[in-house]
Length: 376
Ligand code: PLP
Image (tube, rainbow, N blue to C red; front, side):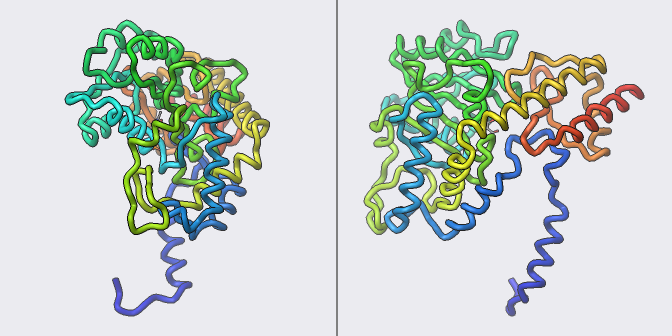
């Protein structure tokens, strides 16, 4: 740090220079976050000083958080669900399995997750000293129930289902996982970090949330398809008792106990999530998801016209395309400004059709992809 401070206009110029190196979302087809809605940004700025780590000082923001959790509970099948706004899907998954571990009191606990689980579960293995057992997937990239059942033993404490898998956007058979969980007396966590703000707004109904008996907890992130600001994840439990194993005493704060993983926690992100959910309502989200799904269908149609097939018919706004010469095609797309990503097994081009994508930009992508494939 310099001894003498720098005038504001110079600092702002430094920031602008740094920002020029950032990628704007326009041609990004690899991200699960998006440009936050202006209403969320406004709310975040209004509550920029608020710290939910010591919410005794910020009772108004605490009330907003309770309202967000209630709205999310209603959206996810249980208006009485409880929980809090986390920093994202990773924290929510950690905390859900921390609860499961603390409630079960096993010396060598293990958790059965689908092979499609997000890498946050590998962090959990390391942090919580839980063995993560990966069940095979079926031909549609959903968890294979026989494989999941075979991995359960006396030390299993929980099952995990994914509702909107990171790579394929697939939804596991949560109802069947719930039957398995109930018959083995296991905790069932549903990771709907991405799908939580998509699946309730699809034309088709899926059983993936608290409406399924046996689902204990759900991750669903306002900072992904919820159109809110970063950092905002949601962790919901069916039972209030599930928050107790997370509590620790906080003797020198204005509150007596805290159950979040982080200490200091953004009240801005809480206000933003509240504001955008109030502003959009179910109808607003339905419209956003509808538009993303329309573009997703157009992308698949355009790809098929180029002779490229999706690995599965998209369930939500995530597409895995079986593109030949994948690395070379992605490199050439990158040279034209497109950011794409990959699925691991099988390797395919992974594209996420987020609200920041415009219809004319999508057409340009299809045309660029076609031109590259023609030359290969
Ligand atoms: N779970 C799923 C299914 C995800 O797709 C992601 C992120 O892509 C996460 C968890 C982790 O979320 P975050 O990056 O907000 O911690």
